[in-house]
Length: 463
Image (tube, rainbow, N blue to C red; front, side):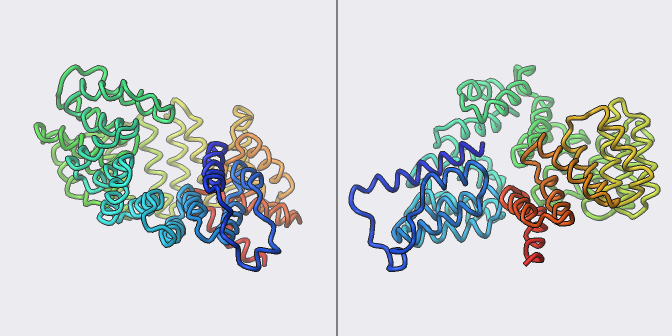
């Protein structure tokens, strides 16, 4: 994926240089003593994920070519990839300052607005981009989806003739017209969409006609993909003829909550019509815990556990809630109950190991023995090696920790959490240059922000 990213950006930059057959604009005097940026250097930076260095290269290029828009567009796209929305917005604005009608910069700005939840602005900006190039009607459709304007979304997707738009059209058709959805899906050939195409195809294949069960199944499937507006669309269709299905209400409430819309009343309705549904109680408990209503969430999980005492996942939910309440002894006990009843114990043992390390609790007594036993069974699991390395570090064994973390990264080089842990360990082990390299890799590679923030703070503290 990194290689493809690098090639795309490199191709655009090369295109910019050679598309203009005349000489480039005269640079400012300082450029006379500044080496021309080397395209080969940029390719190496991008394909190896050294995005900060690539951004510096592109900034230098932008100074040398004061009319060029492409460097700022590429900087914006790097920041989009990293989910750094404000910096992406700044880069695209700088591009638009040089060329106010640049469609790629407009699309970049629209995507930033959409990702920040500014859907009204995103609709306007995507419309501007789509008027210049119909391919951007796909972005406009996604903005309308975020507003839950399904009719407008369908109209926009219908005007963008590409596989991504076709998948969205299939997802909109699937709850009520499986034949039409299948027709759309059969035309999709883009390799990046094959898995989603096949997943949706398998979801609707058992159904030959419209039904409440079809719409409910599609809604749940789209929830699994975290396509929350599409899930809401399907579940609303399922709910209309069957208002007494508590599971539909619960899944609909979950999807509403995920996009920041009110969900409490829907969950209450779900429990009223299905008071003994394990699924309803569990989803409601998760929502309550996310809202900070920990004791009420615990009650819901305990009710679910009473109804399904062999369900290990419910006991794990109770353990997580006890953990957030600060009842660590109780949390450990509930994780152990989950392990006892689980058929696949490894997943729940891993949850317990993460609990030990995140809380720095019982590491020598229980955490290390547990992770060591897991590694004997799963010697090629990068997550387990990361946990082992961090436990070793926290228990005063930094040399052994470094070896474990290096093992984790040899199995999964883009494992950001392990890279951050390694940077911390390298500093303690007297290797500041190696630590700085590891911190920079975290800053470049993290797409969620949490580990990046910690790495940036560590780099500041070093100076």
